[in-house]
Image (cartoon, rainbow, N blue to C red; front, side, top):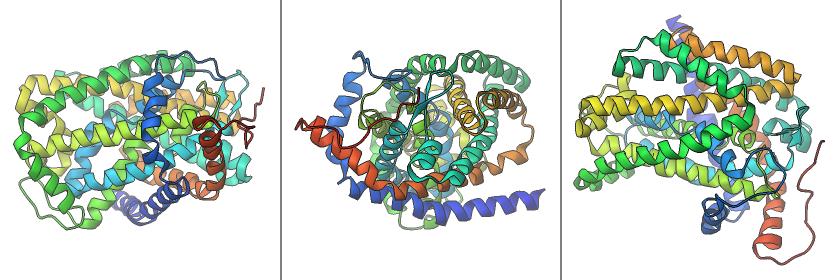
Length: 464
């Protein structure tokens, strides 16, 4: 078994270090240049159209509000990936990994925008009258690549199983350490709560995320920034480590084992994608039910989500473990506890451990809820609503199995399955840049600059 796990890990490393890094960067750069640095030159307008209109009533077509779609998408990325993923990237790739996280996020804004634009244009209504969409739809409808669309759906549907297991195991072990709760009890508790949420569909999931996610993000950022400012004298050295070791190896220090440049790039890109999911294709699925009258308007929320998730939350997490020295105090095998160590050193061991455990609990619940929604939509695309309901049961069972640490060999496929999902989404994106540009130009020249005129493209293909 150990040899098999090593074999899978080596394949995953190859894909993430070479194939995916090239694909993701190339796609992000293609859209960045094709859209004339859209995510930067119109960032102020994007903020105005997103957080500037959170409370504005929206009568456009859709199942949930644009903000609920944003928080649902953010729920799948913010939380465990920011608390566990960033320290793991630093422990394995060094401080330079944070730099590569930033790079994949900055160009990933264009990728996320583009896939949501396409997802909104090619969305359709299902048998229940709900809007559904995602890469599987625009790959099939825009390119006619039915096999690739099917592969994307299959890989993502299967990938949700180990994702759910890893999420529930992370919170089960945290709660066991903080409160001595049995992992079996955590598994059953999370399963019941998730079942209550997901059986209400995307509307109930959205109602949960739009309340929990903003509150937890703001709470986490506030407490983390207090610690960072208390160690403000270390910031200069921290940024020096980040920029220097993005391009040069770093030697071992304390519990840190050292890292080569390739490791910094590999873990920075991999965890950057885990964090914001730009190019993964989950964003369009979460945003497809949103109320909007133009694809670009909803895609702005995708740009904003990447900014919040990676540029803001992941940066704060990374600086927190660097400025407090937690990255040299914890062995790589226990890297997921770095944030707890950083908080415990400042706030006390009891508060630090309890806060992180509670924070993860709430975010794991929202994350699992939206992950299961993603998986269900793939099953629905492949075989209809009955198949979606069947996969819902599979995912609920995976919650309990993951909590007790069962079937851990399945977890080894997470990185590899994610790699296949990315490939199935990103390659089609390379062929659809002209269509994204046309939709963006339509927004810029007809709505943003208000030159008037008829739409240049058919924005939605309604399937009643």
